[in-house]
Image 1 (cartoon, one colour):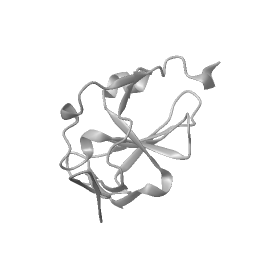
Image 2 (spheres, helix red, strand yellow):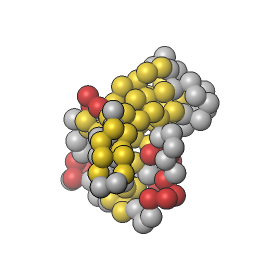
Image 3 (cartoon, one colour):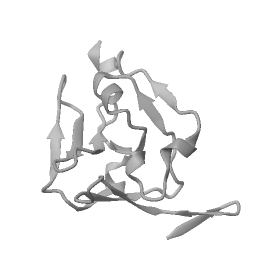
Length: 131
């Protein structure tokens, strides 16, 4: 399925994979990647990923659910997933909005996160849930 914006076709369904290919996700991104960002919280600083967000219903694990590992910390609200083989962070259920998944834009096939230009950094160090 494609959506045309101006003269550009945007594929609505995107494939995202970990480095070794054991985990494959399908993401519904009818408007492409919206609001890419970094976060300065303790885990995001270390993983260094640029993330986008989708509704829970817009991310489907195609393969590798048995390979995914879950990591939680602090309030144990956010659910961070990574490949148990290669260690690549693929996605997480967000703490600030548990109705959304954050996903690693670097895992999207055909997307180079370095082509996104300047990326905003959100203040995860001072998260409202920590007050």
